[in-house]
Length: 332
Image (cartoon, rainbow, N blue to C red; front, side):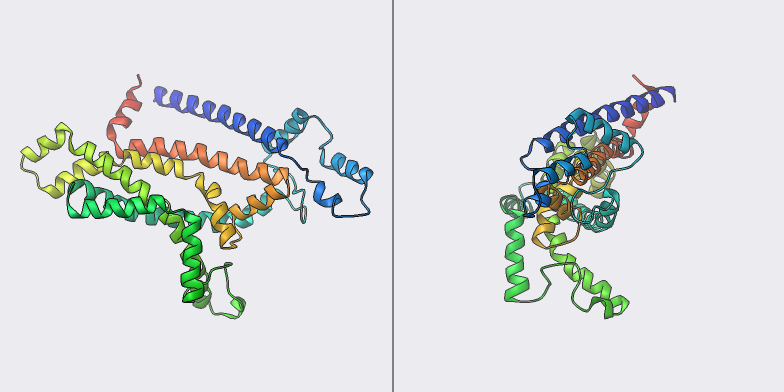
């Protein structure tokens, strides 16, 4: 138990160091970009001169050295205060993020579940029947999925299913008259608006995950213990699902851990195309407006999700492979 606690403590300290490094680099990089939050408030106002701009910079603290600005921001972050937005309604940053988080999180979780339900069976079947018709057909489909950009597929589906054959809505989260609908009608209306975005999310990730699953499964099937299990006369079903599949899931767990940051990064393009009020669209608007507190709030959330994804991957390793749990318990 002492070794386990020691490893956890070292891991947490390393996470803190990496988190601080991410925030320092992010804070420095966003201030390198040309433009300032005061530009939109002064450039478009003919009555606002240099004095007004200087007053705004003093109000926002932009007249201070960069390290002083970062220290002040870090002090607020320790109190879980992300500051106030510098553009629009000047609301607290966390309130803006909290409003957009459920939509982005829900779409990505739904896409992740669909990806697993599609990619894992395809990868396992392609490895089990290696060189067969299913393996060849799935390989062709996967490479088509690799070569097809997500934004291009989104525009194509919008043209086909939204304009040529108006089956699904292609913009926004709800339809006109949404508030006058009944509960089941509102649920179905939101679902129809999310079908295409979730499909685009899924199509961009299942191809790669199925290839990783196939490669990992082939590697496991070559192991000596699989040959021993077959030599003992175990059925193909037991060999596949009880002995091979569990060990083949290790690379997939790694990919899942690294997929967590896509909750924000991968949402920017899709949410902008479909005009969905999620975190991706909020982050894009913040970048265009040079809204430093809102940008840093989004980046901090992405960093936390990245580090949490790595920790979840470590936990997943232990759940998938008992040997890792035994090694952690004994220490090195």
